[in-house]
Length: 219
Ligand SMILES: O=P(O)(O)OC[C@H]1O[C@H](OP(=O)(O)OP(=O)(O)O)[C@H](O)[C@@H]1O
Image (cartoon, rainbow, N blue to C red):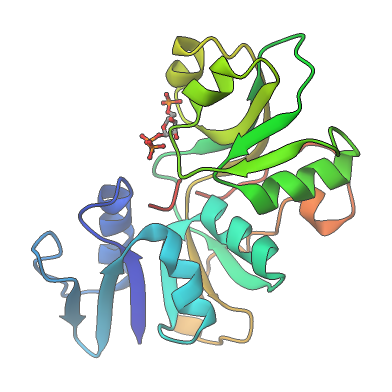
């Protein structure tokens, strides 16, 4: 089996290494410059966390470890379900809508355009808002645009506060998860892991802004 996981340049490397070490026994040297490693009959390939869902969906790897947020974003953007499984919590963060109280929001800056669009559709809220895609570090532009809001990752909340963003609504909780194709069957790697559903606003059922379990930021 080939498993993809965030490499040493990723903020998820530490938490991912811990999880992957439990999934694949006999791994060595995962912090070196080598981005592939043998573990008995299995192989670990290291990459950017946000590329893991694509590698899984394409069949290039059998399974991946990355953030639940990244998997949900990929599934919504590609209209393709993936099988997501909860792993032990390492560092839970929240994908959060934020702005400055009282603003008339016209633009939403986000690294989650598909999640943002699904959430807006589910809540028939700010449907006319323009969505501008970013790769992170969105708080500054949100703050200086008088009609700006954002959907971004919040861990401690310190960055929100430091940039004067005082209104926030969590859309979903995120932590590390295991991802496979929906058709993938391997009792070994997924055994005993709870299945993670998509957020309710993306399922078309319960329309509340909910907080569903899962893992961080996939880079
Ligand atoms: O709530 P806090 O604990 O303050 O964390 C939130 C910050 O962390 C993330 O940034 P990251 O460190 O991943 O950098 P990037 O977004 O610029 O890639 C996120 O984009 C926020 O900017």
